[in-house]
Amino acid sequence: MAKSKLTLAAIMARSPDVDLAKVDATTEQDIRRHMVEDGYDPDEAIRDEDIISPSVIRKRLGMSQRRFADAIHVPVATLQNWEQGRTPMDPSARALMTILAREPQAALRALARRRAA
Image (cartoon, rainbow, N blue to C red; front, top):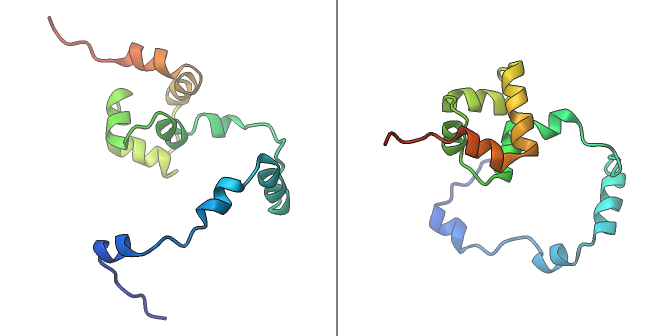
């Protein structure tokens, strides 16, 4: 099956195929039922891997990869490797992610670069 190529303008002109009223009407009970139907346990404890995921933390903070990498003083390529699972984080990076997950504003303040007076 051949893929059709669309321009950005054509994509933007299309109406979404998502029923937003249905999404808005979805309740927490519906979400729990869907999780069970999909084989997930909605009461399962959050794993440490979920808490210290750099991409989850970065997205929670609303930061781009470049901005987040700059804030935590690592090259963007290193962050991308962590997020894509190409390279594991060392223990100090995991500790930093744990701090960012639990106390993000304090961690970012502590990591902020001070300008010379």
